[in-house]
Length: 382
Ligand SMILES: NC(=O)c1ccc[n+]([C@@H]2O[C@H](COP(=O)([O-])OP(=O)(O)OC[C@H]3O[C@@H](n4cnc5c(N)ncnc54)[C@H](O)[C@@H]3O)[C@@H](O)[C@H]2O)c1
Image 1: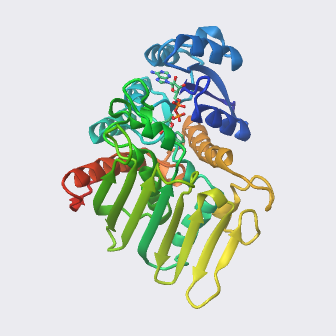
Image 2 (image 1 turned 30 degrees about the vertical axis):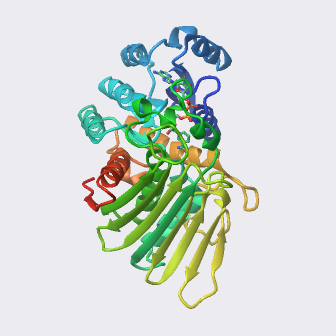
Image 3 (image 1 turned 60 degrees about the vertical axis):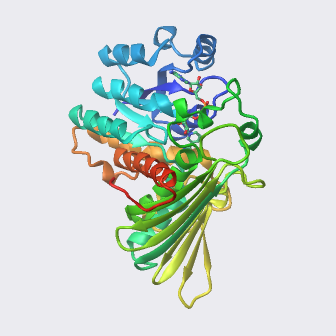
């Protein structure tokens, strides 16, 4: 089957994650970037189009125009990647879905549960596939952790500890003003949550992806430390899962000395799994009564479900780009199968789905509800 074609919204000069997405797609070498609307700024759009060698007639000045034109082309795109600030995700994704174009969208999926439900409806009605690029599910050792849990290696899960501290926004957050507002701290662009949406949803999603557990209820406290802004930069949440297990999630954008320190421990009745994002080539597995083991990515003892994502031998570190590439590898497989006329059940492919995106939006909004009510317990629907 011929190579896939895709377009991108966002990811212009100076942007962070768009370039990582493009590198990730190139790693798999089965799709080409053919169009885009790369920035909200016209000069940056022009510059991006030139640098990426995009046909000028497909370097669009708005995502609305891009959806319309690409939807009408015989050789239109197979999917669009959305890597803009969160506010743009839902309106842009909806337009592409309405044109029958599949979507890969950054997390958090959107700002409100209503928007997320709208996307779910549009995807169903138009028969579109939808990946939400929760990066950390793409690591080989995330796939290994998921399989070990599915195989019952650590038994029924009793407790989860998830933490995700960062400090890179600290200086900006402490000097926020009307003219100096990073979009992550701006309620107009980020919605009701900052750290809880940006980082908290990664914990919520990784735990759900690996364990399959759904949050039943939560109680949350959001802090706003040392800034003029209004959105949270430090989050503590207690969660109860549908199987009776419990969890503690902490995330922070003002934790001095921490870069991108996502760490998740899953405690079962027979053992514990520990995943540390900054050391993602390894996974710690401790079984009751035995010395802890360190599993190494690429080793022969990994499960086939994880091994199929290994790109280079053990000891040659893989990282962020490979994690995205693994998500795109799963997504592209689903797209190839769809084009071949096969029945595609998105849960069978390994990429994080629209349902997971919805759960993330529900999670951060319920965290805000809880915190506003004095950290009381609230029911989680999705
Ligand atoms: N999965 C991850 O690990 C991860 C990491 C970083 C960011 N993200 C997510 O990716 C998204 C982008 O984050 P970022 O850090 O790259 O932001 P960024 O500010 O660096 O880049 C955003 C880009 O979107 C462009 N843009 C804004 N409005 C637009 C519009 N209407 N049309 C076209 N382009 C537009 C901007 O010009 C810029 O190029 C966010 O949703 C964020 O939460 C995810």
